[in-house]
Image: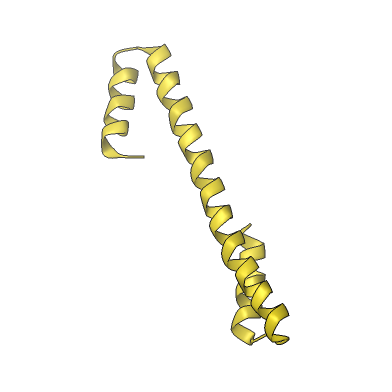
Length: 75
C-alpha cells in the first residue's frame, strides 16, 4: 500500500464516500492477493530448483534441506 493510496482512502472516509472507500479497499485486497501468489510462486521455483539439484546430484546438503523445509513452511 502506497502513501497515496492511504491518503485517498482517508479522504474517501472523511468525505463519507462509502462506495469509493469500498472500491479502494477491494482494489487493495486484490493487490494483496496477487502479492501472495507472487511470493508463493517464487518459493516454489527456488524449492523445485533445489529438489532437482538433489535428484541430479544424488545428495542433499544441509543448506538445501533447510531451504526446502523453510520454503514448504512459507508456502
